[in-house]
Image 1 (spheres, rainbow, N blue to C red):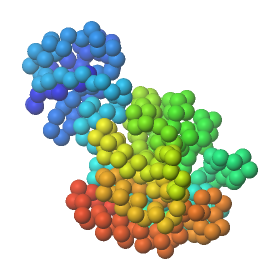
Image 2 (image 1 turned 135 degrees about the vertical axis):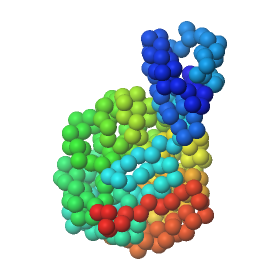
Image 3 (image 1 turned 180 degrees about the vertical axis):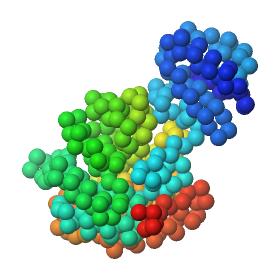
Image 4 (image 1 turned 135 degrees about the horizontal axis):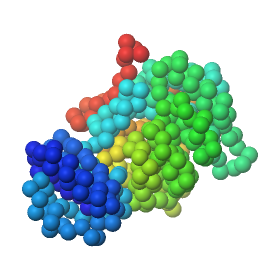
Length: 345
């Protein structure tokens, strides 16, 4: 249930209303937007008299919410959520590009890639330290050493780092990671999501290979229910009958997620396609659909990559993509490419 308050509501009235609602056994989510103040009620609202609430001077209208996700629901939080990661804004019209290799292979490799993607305009560095692979014989990542390599690259370039967590037991290793990624295979690892909800780290949550948007948002709700509202949604393609691409990019998910939720929405065109040549057009499609950013795999030598070389751009290709991204964003006056200035570092 959502209460939309009248403009210029008195603070004393607001305080008394919130206290009364809490005494009814409800959790209260207060959202003060640019134009409206909203109170979201979480819990059993069946015993609440809607007519009584409507009759209060402070209340303009009352709505029942049918969606099972409450914290992630735009009806509870009409304004876009904007996250601050090391001074970099994500969401709310700020367009970010996360780039880097699928796997962190060596300190020299990740630093080289970090320098090149930063020069082209990337604002955050991605790289896999822990690698979930379909085959148990494939490269599984350098694990803790991989995180240390990423931190070395951050030290060299100033780029905040994004890397994937696999299980709850590894969480202490992510203390210095700026954004923790939850991969598609772990989207419904509810115990992991609950633990991440108890942190205040930004979480980049990827959509599962065969999950609906409702299930996707419910996974975000698991994190937010624990008190961590720093969630970024990432559409990375879903499994369909089509075999021409690794997955099928659900481009319609972007505007729908923006309609359903206030959380930032990114697109991963690399995993959606599995083909480096079509990463650029999918990236531009993501901008047109309203995404808050893209996450692109970039490797200094894709042919020799230990994982996912076929979908990785080389630095020259990424630089060309970034030029097209900048041109594309000039069409959309509501979004601006986030840039890192050297003097700010």
